[in-house]
Length: 169
Image (cartoon, rainbow, N blue to C red; front, side, top):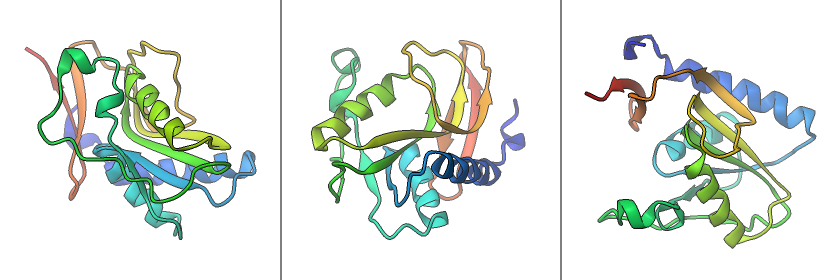
């Protein structure tokens, strides 16, 4: 899939529409938005604006929560998470750019639980791609892609946002 054919702004509009429907169907009002560093935060910022949320935006950096931390090591510039609100009893929309194996989302949920017990967590992802290793699924997606194991998709940004599909040699 050539990168020129992926309209990120349209995917964000699709994600917003899906979230509108999800929130209405599940009677969830006034949600908190939390993005997973870095691409998820970029998408969450746009959704936060589209929803005219009056709450601050949360950002998670799940580096210390990854189950492959000992294998990949610590990135030299790990930034701290920022959740400038109490999530206890609140509906949280957890946002990521690409859902692949499920390990990033699992790590993000583990970190969220350290901040409190949310009433619910809705997972919204820009791209849901094939290759899950854990039983995690998105509640709302911008699009789903079936990619081969040697293909990767990455969101670059923050301005402009661009999805790039590449193949490892």
